[in-house]
Length: 324
Picture 1 (cartoon, rainbow, N blue to C red):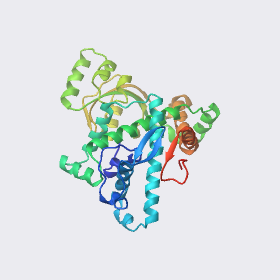
Picture 2 (spheres, helix red, strand yellow):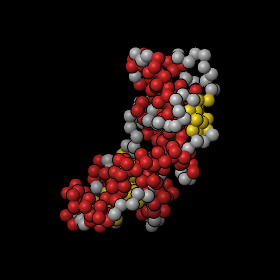
Picture 3 (cartoon, helix red, strand yellow):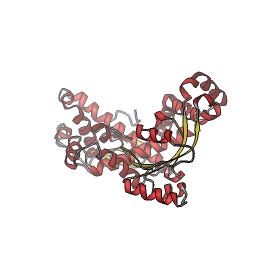
Picture 4 (cartoon, rainbow, N blue to C red):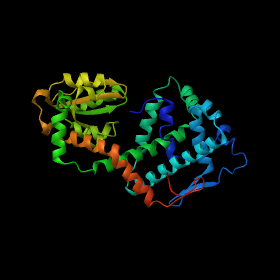
């Protein structure tokens, strides 16, 4: 789950969305500039001065004193670097659209609800959003863009080929850190204890756990798999969930379990002691670990460079049209 207040709000400001009026600090060096002026195009899609100034203003809000100390040259460099980040974000979002990546309104709303829970009141949240130079609407737009980017990168990461030799070597080196007591679990997440209790009654009457998870669960990551979490260790889940799951017998369903995310019904389908585990128990997790490692260290950089090379980009603020 995403955490932090301003950090969360600004996490993906680089992706850019119109619809917010920049404040004085971002505009002060551009008093005669037209906010609708196009500063860049990405495959024909426009990025205006207004968008860039908004993102500059958000960056300034995180450290206004540093901005005040900047000379003209560094302020222009800030505008250029912000525009380049917007261009890069737009290129990636366009690729996500081509790949058919989608983010539902439900997913966006869940992220926003996680943000909302970090504040004691609606007023406090709105004040923090205002301080961060954003709004509820813009935060949701940015969250959608961020999730689309993450989904696209996850898709690309899964395409990285890992050899069996690499998997076996990883297992030999990391075995002591990989083997932990595990349970194979499914869960249904709902907002209230009453909902969880009602669903539990349906289970008692013989309705299938998987069907009810698909129908009622608020966990968008698992509901379409019937609530399946796969094999999990205690460390992978929040304390309340882990304590409940590891106390259940195989085939047993928990009473409603409260966590910071809501109320869970947990079904345990299997257990594995750490001393009995083999490479086969961890093969896919090792593959995923190695794919992610390669994506972060080299593959992402090459993929992004390829997207930039194919994109038709015009950048008014850059000395040359290439994206740096």
